[in-house]
Image (cartoon, rainbow, N blue to C red):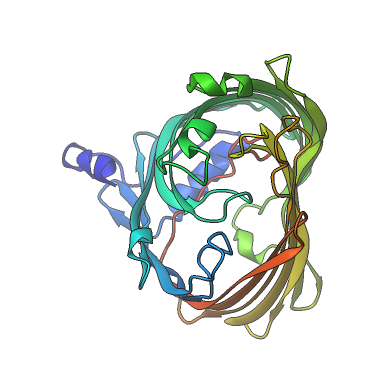
Length: 429
């Protein structure tokens, strides 16, 4: 937000209706995003909101990690701001910042300030689209399925993409991202989290797209990634991965809000090989991907399906990585134009195909999560969600079940940030 406002004094003379254009699908999406921004201040197009998220009672904020339950009252307050600055009809700057405060009534050490910032430049030409930017994330957040407690995670990102619209229905893209992960918590048990998880990640995607219908876009994505750990004792974790993914996404047509489309979401599955550089460590390969689909199969009833499977680095000294799998589904029933109720059931599991012989096998956890909610659109700017989440975790070695239940409310006032339909490959962190 600060960066965006710094441009304001010398931009008063820019045209009020400048926006990205061209005949590429991300260029058209960019034009819609700029034109639909909620507020305008001179040349600036602005979206902003006040958010009170997950305000309520949690029966155990550590989900069994400390043994005895630690209940507390908590909420997250945020002020997301998006500023769009058209420099011409082909170039748009996009700034986003979201400061947050994470509050716990009794557990004072868990209180924290969070912030996410990103900045991007979009260039939309007749048959070409370019994007370049980066971001800074500084969050106290849940670490992973292995350690369900808050830790400080900092991520610095640089990214860019280039797309060529080869025909009305087909296009090709190259996508690059560099991410630097840093963790601030000193240790978890006998493990120093920063040593185990601090790393640099680089990824390169080559993607081909084909759009056979106005609301569906197919893709095939070839990906190469590298992972490098700066801690010398963790050099055995240095790795690379190769993947080939295919799938599709549902997209809104011009002038249609994504939330009103009958079918929404994306489907991405493929094969990934996880190759550790050390010859002493075991490589692995297999199914990977992400599915998030929903459709209105009956009048006023939307059915959802979810699935994800990915490799993640482990905090445990006896393992290098684990495979996190999540699957489930749910439904939403619209009671009226302003009110709806929903229910979701998700299952999760972490498996360790590679660990050091002679060391204790890390705990293989299984999760079950029930979620219920009532959504209320009280006005154009005000949405309220009443929600309840009931989670159960079982560790295979002990069959001991841990529970964490949450009941609360989320409130959003204003117009949150929006994103464009930009070149992306298969989902990854």
